[in-house]
Image (cartoon, rainbow, N blue to C red):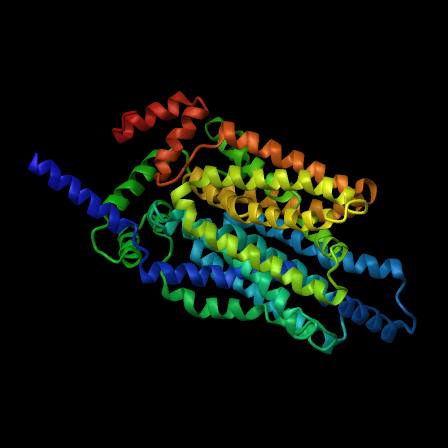
Length: 504
């Protein structure tokens, strides 16, 4: 009995040690998220505030070249390209995630990716001096490629480096820095700071600073231990990386877990996107990722932000002050994502997904009602503001951050890069589609557009409730076993039981 008590106490101590956030792990998380994810968010909103001044620059450049003003329809086309090339570039970036992370590693891909950002920043920052608006459009494609890679590689990198009982919290940090990037771009884009005729080139060019810092600091931190052991076959380097990240020498348990994962995947090799899409053993993982990513982008987040200014104006906010209210909404987005970092390990992924999409669903339904009645019932405009805030809270705690965490957790090493390629592609295609069609939806349906978003959120909630399992505090292999049962892949499950000595 005494020996059993000692074993339990030892096990408890070991679990406590595994959950510790060490300085190297904290630093590599912050450097990766600030140098990459922050950039994604920053470039989402950086051109919103200075848009009128940038369009004036487009027109003035055209006048200097041709002696006449730019046709209004042509200017609209150019600006539409400036906006839409970013998500289109993100789609292209997602397509090259697999080859890069498999050949250059996770850390190596992030370092290479910084070159895209720095080049784009220099081009955008000097576009006014060079008197060319074409490079801005080209740079937006380059920044999109950068964002497409960053939005997939950073969660993969951090998810593979984190201990399992911190994996969710650390996995949300990239989304936290995305919201920080959006907020910083909104603040710097205020007309009193850089959102004016003289300041917009600097506003666009600042995006290269985080990449330069990451390029200088990230080489001092280790590569993903799972990549080093499973894909490179270098156990010594993997052990050294783990010892650095965990802060102690005894990492045998994690090394053994990686060996077991490596053993179970030897016959599969690295799955291509085509193989992933046709492999029955990963059917529900793939469907789940596609549904969550579609739900994330088609749930109406862009529509809510589009309507926000109009809602605030109808509630009596002065036109000059709307930009400050928008910044306040951005701050709420940051605070709620920050909260998600601390509650994801206690509440779990599944609860946050259900709560997040549920809040988005309910707020879209009420917002539809409020927008249609605000001209006849005076207080409905204030209810609209409440709906916007509740929607932002729902998206920040669940819909935005958790799907990327789930990609890392629901796939093993051999299929994870291909899964991120699929998930990232769906993310950016849906982002591009919403940006392309929402104005037409709004013109045809008005406030009833939000009923479509409400339906999408409801469908996503129903799917998650019945299909998506809880992955909190489970190893990658344990999650794989859960999904193997769901896929009814008895052969795969039996193989794992025999090979690894596990029993249900």
